[in-house]
Image (tube, rainbow over all chains, first blue to last red; front, side, top):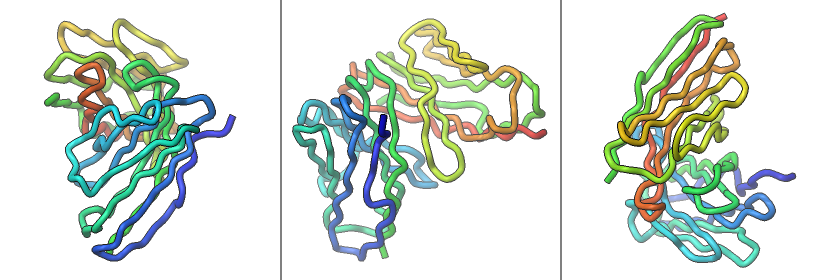
Length: 114
Length: 110
């Protein structure tokens, strides 16, 4: 069974630009959640999508948004990039919501904002 | 907002030792995840707990809901267990998302 696939693996963007990251979950998984990891703040929850609906959102500004498609694939968008958005962005999929199912993580997208 | 504390932050032990990593949280939860992250970034889910105890190979995870505390134990530790171990809690039935501890950096020396 294929694991969680995130694309691209690496991205370099300039301040003010926007970026879209993609996450393909394990087949049959209905929940996709997104996380930001930085050396200073560690892992932080961004949002969770289940059955194409955003179920919750972490403490991030509105520049961070996402969506989930009918095939459970998810995209995350960050607009008006800031230097502080440089981070490893991880997604995870699970069969059910993450209070009921283990998480399966992708390898992440490393975003560098210059 | 749930506060998640892990201890110790860093742990160096000899191969074969019994390892315990602790996780405490401030608000009642519906589930707790233990995760393992090796250098290079890959994160693996070890356990998801809502009560009691789970065992997988040399790893054991326990949770005490009343005391708001969970422990991860590694028996017969091995250098390949060297990694960062992270606990994450699900609060508000999931409505509050996941809150992470800062992680425990474990090094097992041969």
